[in-house]
Image (cartoon, rainbow, N blue to C red):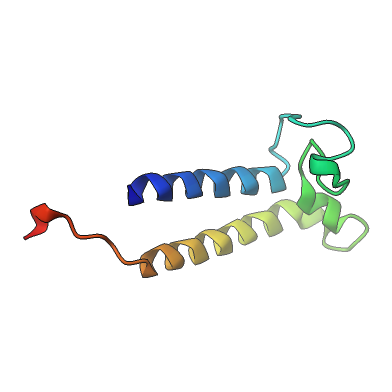
Length: 91
């Protein structure tokens, strides 16, 4: 059961990280934004939007990649701290 929950969490995390990138190709909600929040555009690419008008804008993909690495590293450390259940077969 722990494995299924972990896979669901990882799939959700992957979808969020993909939405933040410029690789999001799907328009799954209407134009005003998800749940009426205008900052959540249906096209994704939020990192580029956040960096627009700054000197870091040309490096949005690199900044996204470093952020993904940090988020996945922290998620791995969090999952490593969770106690693993022992099976009856382990005895």
